[in-house]
Image (tube, rainbow, N blue to C red; front, top):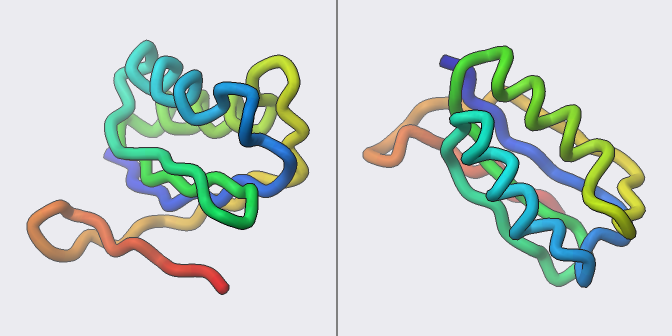
Length: 91
């Protein structure tokens, strides 16, 4: 299994990015969560088979029509606690 913490920068809110990312993750068999942040970025944690997680990251870099993704930064999530993830906060 592969666990990643993902930050997506760019103009991605208002184009259904979060909903479509969830839909794509389910299609690929990836679990986790995704949320919009106040600064306009999107934060996510994904877990699944390595190929499926990599496919989701590639999709996130492209985004749905209308998304202006500047960068997708992914770092391994460190398993801790009951939910299995340490959520890394960014400034």
